[in-house]
Length: 111
Length: 112
Image 1 (cartoon, rainbow over the protein chains, first blue to last red):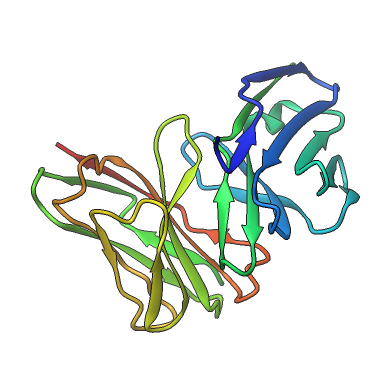
Image 2: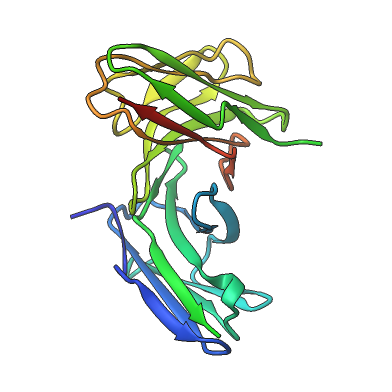
């Protein structure tokens, strides 16, 4: 079992819809959770981070964390074609000093 | 203009040759990281360093070496012992708390 697993995708949604991206992790000592967006051929860029159980909203993005279920998700509301990218979930155990990344979910938003 | 630079953007080498990838940051970050990304896959950690003159192996360190003589610099050497070196290599940095990592533009290495 991988330490960080993401829904395999690819995920395709129509413009204006809600895109839901999911991630589960195995290390119960994980303390910080990140979502990165990576356009094809480019490096990842951070779009959201969450440390506490519950929801965190930033514009059209909402991150949700449930530590008991070891589950973190990213919702993208009013999806735009420019949101088409691969989304990487990363989980950090501060004591270990490093993060572990999932394999990513590729999202396509169709006009 | 703060950020992370990696050079070169594209690198071609013959099998059996060692090659060094450059990574420099002016964000005053303590921690630096090297990742490898293969097509359709996530990032796999090669080496990381939380402070100058100290570094740790990541999940796939075999065939790679690093040094951290300066806070700003964390070069990665891909040795001839690395069986499948062709990949996209990403360098990142963060503050010591590691709350978020900032990535360089990457170096795409092709070995033939």
